[in-house]
Image (cartoon, rainbow, N blue to C red; front, side, top):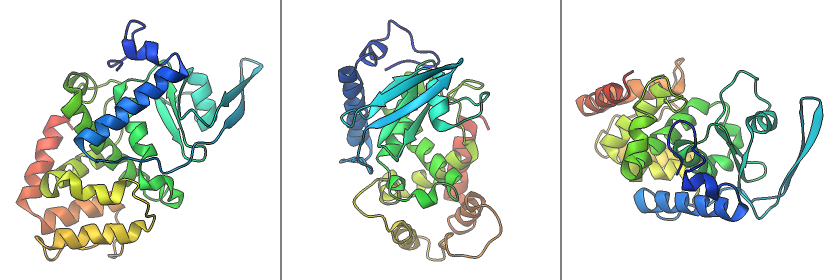
Length: 265
């Protein structure tokens, strides 16, 4: 896997990424990492279909064609940004196109952290609940980064230190506040319990899945409220943080401080 920050042309993973067969091998290795460490049977929430797009750059029009048989692709930065319709100054290492079941990596910036993060997105329930992506963006991104840092620490500890634990890099946590909250929650209840609200398991009734998680938490912390239905004016992650602090107490607060210090926030 490429190391942070810029992939070296001598890195075996970069060589793999230069062919569709090699990209499939990288994808399968990443799925195996998820399967071995956190969720036994990750599966894609969206079917892969052919992607055809015209990308304009420097006065030229370039056709982009990714066949249905290929889920993972690596393209120059300008292609990835145009497909995502992002601002020119925005840093974008990769993206997941749920509409076509594709993962695109920025050739100039991707590393193992990017690959893990985007593959996690592609095997999440949120690919089937696109209506949640905007209102719960920080909720979803924080949980995805939480899983990403866990997998990095378990399987790529050197990258974990060079990427997430090093300040002012492209791999520094994008949503540190939300990620730290989820890491603290995972410390208290375990990642396996969080799996029910994240990974695609053939059910898209996400609100029911979240309520099931709340009911599990209530077995130990009886007064824990469902933040999706409880009244409140604060953003959802602030409400989740407050609820954990009030109802779970010191165990959560200690875990939150631990991860705040780990990520130097």
